[in-house]
Length: 120
Image 1 (cartoon, helix red, strand yellow):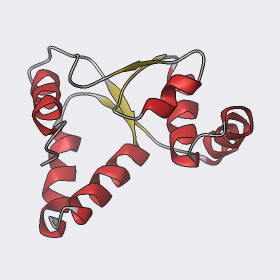
Image 2 (cartoon, helix red, strand yellow):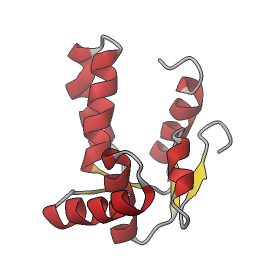
Image 3 (spheres, rainbow, N blue to C red):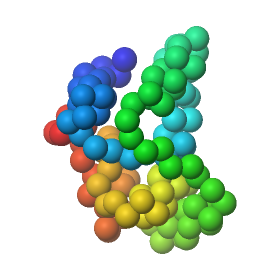
C-alpha cells in the first residue's frame, strides 16, 4: 500500500515466490510487517499476510538473546535504530552483507550493501 515502494516490494515478493530471488529474513521482520499492516489500518489481514510469508520458500532466522547483545554492540558503534541493529546482527549471523531496504541508515554500517527495492 506504500505509494512510493509498494509496487517494487510486491515485485520482490513475486520474485521470491517464483524462486527468482533467494533471500533470508528474521522473525523481527515479520513483526515489523505486522505492525506496518496495523498502521495502514489492515489489522484484520495481519495473520493472513504473515502466514503467506511463512509459506514462501526461504529461511526465517529466529532472534535470540545473543543476537540482542550483538545488536547493542552494533548500536554502540553505528548509533542506528536498535531494530536495525538487530537486523544487522542477524545478517552477521547469516553471513550476508546485502539488505533490501528503503532505510538509508543501513548505509552507515560499513560492511553492508543496501539495495533499494525500486532498483532491484
